[in-house]
Image (cartoon, rainbow, N blue to C red; front, side, top):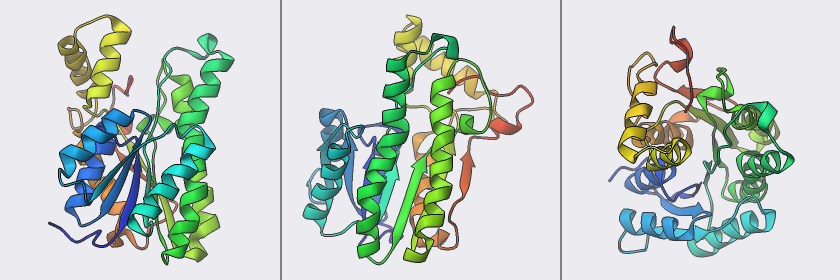
Length: 267
């Protein structure tokens, strides 16, 4: 058991799997108590059970964070259960595939609601709790493709770029209140979600989808996909005291995708 988040309370959105679940597990290992928030309540419950079978350190909350009232409820339930809030990780997100010429008002509305407004709503209610706790950290999970172009995911990449703008402005707004706000930009990451969605989109088997993702991941300088835990460690750094002089920053955790000669494709 580590101590980098000893006695801290964290909310991790998109906590039902992938990077969110890995982050929740790592936070608990480092001494935190954690609320895993996910639109899939059953996935959040499974992740919470896997991380802490006793149920005392992890709270599962089912909530559609695109609804401001649901975001407020998630923060409220966390504070009611654990007494305070010190860290918010805005990790929840969805994807819409295709070029901008295929975008619809409905697809724009949904992806903006989940990828941008959900983070804004959670922050709106979490930041006052962080201030009451004497300060804290907000970590927004963006994407390497917020800063590096690619084809086929214009709406997703636009919302992830907007999240970086939100990060910088929030850092300016709340520095005097001892609230640090930073962003992590993951690259190709091996999650069950990515494999499943790719298989569904392309009509292939999960095994073929996983192989295709590994091939894409090989285009970064490190030549492989990231594991969710590798992204979680970057989030942990920005959440804990080790990054006490870091705010308004964007941390690229992409295996050198933006430096690759071949450039990225999709994540």
